[in-house]
Amino acid sequence: MSQLARKIISDNIKKYREKSGLKREELSLKLGCDNSYISKLERYKVNIPIDKIEQIASILNVNIIDLFK
Image (cartoon, rainbow, N blue to C red; front, side):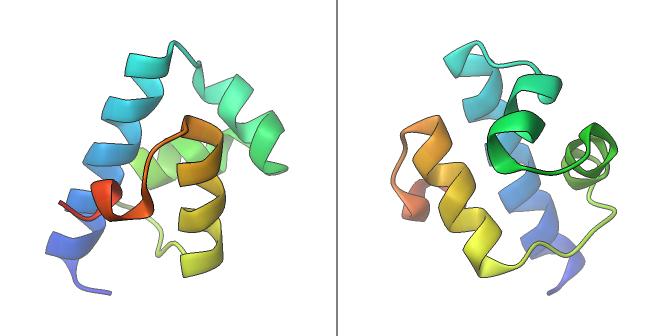
């Protein structure tokens, strides 16, 4: 995944997470991962697999396409 794609997805995850009122810790618990993973994700430091993007979209109650815009 390119740096630009990571940035777009990560920025949108952070935006929708904050809009929904979830803290990083809460998202990590719902996703079943470590809080540091969410932190790295939001700072564009990790490639995120499509299945995780789908899970996050579901948790944040947004369409997966919204995370790619």
